[in-house]
Length: 564
Ligand SMILES: Nc1ncnc2c1ncn2[C@@H]1O[C@H](COP(=O)(O)OP(=O)(O)OP(=O)(O)O)[C@@H](O)[C@H]1O
Ligand SMILES: NC(=O)CC[C@H](N)C(=O)O
Image 1 (cartoon, rainbow, N blue to C red):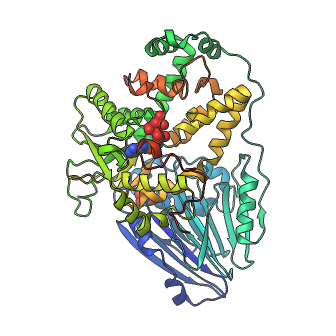
Image 2: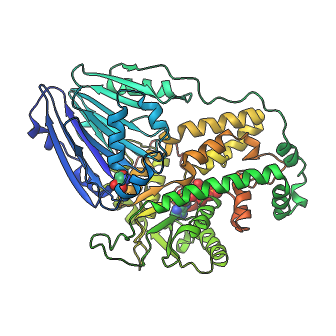
Image 3: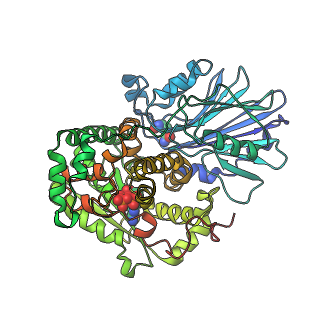
């Protein structure tokens, strides 16, 4: 993961002041251990400084940043998997291609152009000719980018990661489109993504309130995702209804019946193909060195891929698919975190992790799976949170942010009592519950308002994902100089699953056992892949599965431990 940073002083062209404002340098450097550079730019009345650290993942050689040429300066934290020129990308990586792409499109239909690129990103691009600063997060918000301002409002900061208690206050940039700050006019504009989520305008208003200024809209957003009115019966719904009497049916009978139905099977196979492709792309885009050997470019057989692994169905499916594409000579690290509150660290996720490990071993007998038991004491949790993790979670601040941010930080640190993971990329199951309907609230919504309620709840979860989770998760994991990769959030996977009617992906009704009907499409795929046990495991959220969270606390409350 790269760390990107820009500070802009609108009323002073003395660059010396700016360099002293690289106050997050250490945090930025953690994200990109392979290179770090900065550039300063003095304009007539204002000055800018840019900094980037790089975690080299694409191209035959590292692409240092920031890139500066006569027309622009560019900082990039991203991973484009398709949509740029594929043959050149393999050789040169995505950084220079993305930069050229922006230069070519910045003044004409940028948004449609970006829509054709697949992969996560955040970028900062300064157009020297027109004195305009562009910045954005991809349309799902998979990479972090924060916007900060000081009390006087004369200095703006863009950064992947910040800190609490500085002269700046920060907000996560909403992933609603591309923003442009006109340095001469001192004004903001946003160009919305060509489709619109219901929360676009709310998010814009929040940002305006934060900046204490209006943001003009380049063109109104078109109507976007909405709940389909036509919830008419279809073959799969009829089939699922026919599976009543849950007590009398073994789960395997349910899967067999579902997979015998041609339309259900077609969806399972389409999902399988799309996920395979997403996993393959995410595994292929990396140099062949592990974290310990990359500095010396020493060829090795250490693990380069890790999976954050609870044993639950979301990550079990990904682990099984990873086995198809990771070099058979290399182990795959399965990182499993557990906190002291669990007796002997035997948290529910440790137990299911070990269970699913056995399934994977049986299914992939030639693979060496490194199950890494990451045990975290209360003392270490408190120390690391105060020292550092709370800064990574910032500006988010709830009890849930605290639990998830800390659990992910320790999990992706990848350190057990006798091993430190050498993986540079980490595959995770984020997004699966939002896409396939895995949360309890989906069942509640169905109970209250039937299919329409369920669909609305899925839409809400989907549009809130960038704000509830993704920026924070990116900041927590990248801090170890490892790259988070989220195959469920691949554009093709998302488009396919989002377009299915809800009953073709989740079935939280009384017709199927509770905790089993949820994510039924993904479970069917797990079953098809041979994960007979993992396919039936009830959802257990990371904060409870790892035992980091106190179930008596309300996750939505402000955390007293984050001190912001
Ligand atoms: N205890 C854990 N240790 C390491 N990684 C975890 C742990 N719990 C969750 N994760 C990671 O976070 C992702 C999201 O967690 P979540 O609990 O939603 O998924 P899951 O455990 O794979 O499946 P399910 O949602 O059905 O329990 C997981 O897919 C996994 O990558
Ligand atoms: N991790 C990053 O964001 C680096 C950018 C680019 N994908 C590279 O591999 O160099």
